[in-house]
Figure (cartoon, helix red, strand yellow):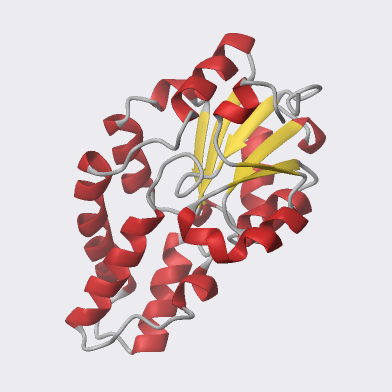
Length: 219
């Protein structure tokens, strides 16, 4: 099993642990529409891996928004929290896999590019906060994904060396961040990143369609 010789498991959040990437595209379309813009085709790829604050800065500059960074983030926060609380489910098999990790005594953390308020909202709504010893956002480190900063910070907080960590990610920037941190990375299938599937397979050490594959010992 890919968890052999590992001490800690680290998850990205959106598209990896929870099925939420559809939500962010919907929010981008609605938000930009308020200011007379259509959502560009390249937007999701460009902002992939950016922290919440980095993404706000990018939107402000690219679309010349008449808002401060804090105002942009507050609008996104309000738009997303309701969806997180009522419309975002766990990925297939994720709940069972989290319970398995806890039963084995492995330490567990989250490394997300999202804002903390939204992370706490989804952890609370899905009742999974108890599984994680640490939750870190990219706004708390020097650089977002694909730089390794966030994964190195989470590993330190979990008391694990990078080689002892298994990372789960859904997009290339996140996979690169985990690999650059010296960790084993398992990519997970997600409809949002389907066009990047081959790139994900090449970058990651493993690839799964859902967490039941791990529980069934097929990976």
